[in-house]
Image (tube, rainbow, N blue to C red; front, side):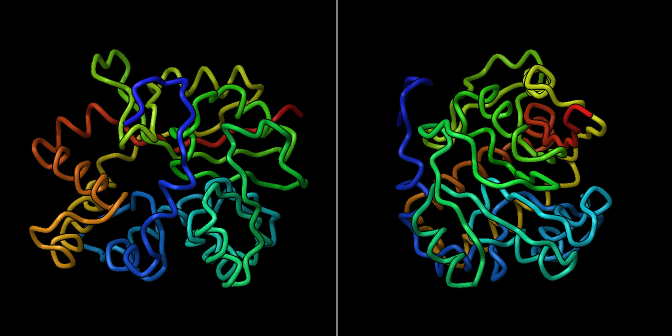
Length: 259
């Protein structure tokens, strides 16, 4: 595990080591690797898709969308199918990029911590689910995104203001910011926040459904690679889910660039 927050992390290896078939067993055939949104006892796929649908009022039909941290293309495919958007994904993972291209998606492969150049293209919406926590220089990243489009949609796990625990987690791939730090960096980067909401409690069911799938797939065996990190997060959260939820808000945020 990396112990230095400034040390470069090999995100490609982290996201490419486990086969897509293994991921499908845990997060579902549509491959949405983010927290869901649940109103009751919906299944995993329904909750995961609802996370994306929650933002539809900010994504006009036919929008040009830059999906930064696109993973295996779950949100991109949904935006194509249900909003008629044109979507360009961005991922650091060679395995994810190859999989998305086989699906016919347009994908840029970039390590956004190591490559500080402007991403190519102009878009109506920049869409980024649970990705900024992987970025060391969050302020610089948010500033660069302003060149790509006028609207920013983020969803991110944060630490609560005043949190005294360690910020580096998920095998060193994530450095958490607090809610106030996220707001500060978004605004300092030149964005104007128009919507913000903590939806951690609506997302909690995701954890129990991930756990069920991990238990079905691996039982007492250790899952491979990053899936073992996911099981560790689940184990920690389920020790005291209410306290965990209070410590780690899940922030949905929409912001506009300068007029």
